[in-house]
Length: 241
Image 1 (cartoon, rainbow, N blue to C red):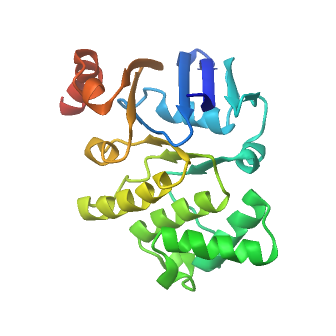
Image 2: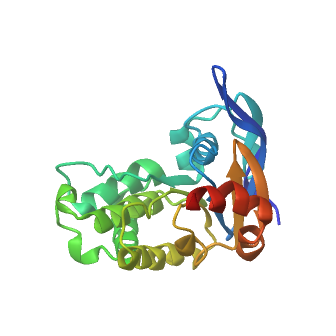
């Protein structure tokens, strides 16, 4: 399948620190790819490069076959690259609905009836309809995570980048979040999800990529990657030590 979002030969250096080295990564429409690896492996840096938050020291990023290496994150958002962060930061002083309306307006460029129709649809998909008129800052962690996901989806993305959105949740709450993420797969939206809670990740993803020291060390089905001796040593072994 033709990739919808692709990075080729991505390297990232901060001074003397090499964070990414020659990383190739691609995700196709409708595909869900999980990224795992120990702390400092370069996972979030890769997501930052794909989203346009930082420009790689070397390599290229393409979206829909177009080179977007020098394109800003807001421009990539309007093109169809959405992102949800580990720490939700909703707009304070606004309701849940207003937060989603802002995302649909500025991210997807919607106006009028289409704007509110999209906002209501996304709230329903993310299980937030009953909280639509609540002030965003009054939400508990799980519902803040749901709102973070809703704001991302309101931009109408072709690719959703998720950065450890399960962090800090209980197992029961993480299960609820999985159900919300699965709703994304109902359509043809691609998902790239970084997550340390591996048993949560494998419930959603079709393919797993493991990184270590800024490089991809395994790429395949979840079973293949998690059973790889190199992955066990680099990631699971370190996590258990």
